[in-house]
Image (cartoon, rainbow, N blue to C red; front, side, top):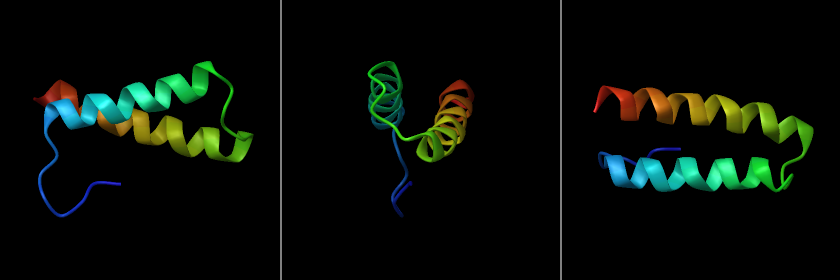
Length: 50
């Protein structure tokens, strides 16, 4: 998920946009969907804190 260096707000937004795009385009298997939604929620929380 996040590497050892601190992720910037911009980097987090790029990751979030990629996840949203994958969801919108039905690119994810159902098992991966739940994992990506959890990841997206974490990114949203990170960005909100910034």
